[in-house]
Length: 404
Image 1 (cartoon, rainbow, N blue to C red):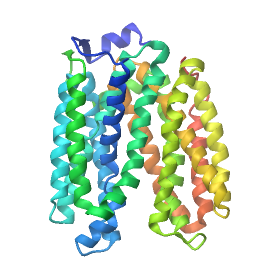
Image 2: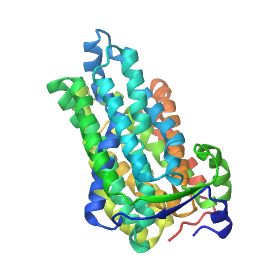
Image 3: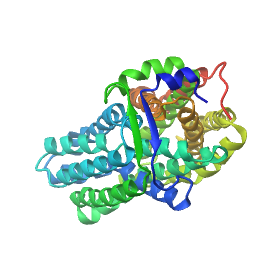
Image 4: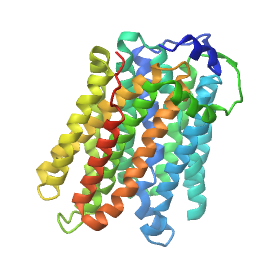
């Protein structure tokens, strides 16, 4: 629980003044579906790059940077929009961000060139931080003995959206064209975003400090909360290991070792469904045994997955087992660490921003290191990067204890 000093230092006080409780199953289902649709917007461009390049008369390599632009936009949105959940009425914020995301996606659908598409993708990703506004609300209003399970329901939706973007996005784009993928996502985002905003409880905010002062508060918040700091380090290590392996996997599968087509290699994204299946039981384990034990188990599972990935460089069944294990480890760790991050301070939206940005940074750095490692040492180099990130993440837990 936050201390009295932390409560006095909070930059915003929220008071629910109506709305349905977050404990309702229909409410949670709507939140999970909305999270899936909005999270998918970040990854829409990646499977469509060959189609976009063909439409603009260039090569996939020349448009590949548009997928990275989406990541940069999401990072900017996390820093500036996600902390607003502690400062303004979340219902209005979700509605306006949904409208802004829809407008940006429609602009992407009619973009006349690569530059215009990149700008639209950047703003769409920046505004699609709705999941990180909804998770703190679900955690705050859930019963204490079921908090992690409710967070897990939203996490399951998030990973389902990521899988849908990579698998269904490519299939729909191939059948109807890449522009219809952006247009269809715009319609879904508007419908589900506004529907979610309508059922959110209205909140009265007593705001102290600037509207966009959240990013400036992050360093002090991390200093005052060792548990939040440990959760951030743990997930940065875990997400980094996953990112190094998963972003480099297509290089292995389409290389001389296996020689698979790009479409066939893309079907490995279906292993991401493991995350959706693992999230609910992981939440129950966190509620029962505490975050520390679940994170420790997740790290042990990831430590087994890394040598399986190395073996998978030559044996395909080992790659199947490794893909399932790393996704299970990632989502179990995420549910535990995010639940801890959301309950350790009096400003959960700002704390959640620190947590998600830390994980994102760990993943981005590991992915950046995995590319040169693959070029110099092959698949073994990628596995070494993943192992190193796990060691660094676990070292950050030394001397720390999780919360029940």
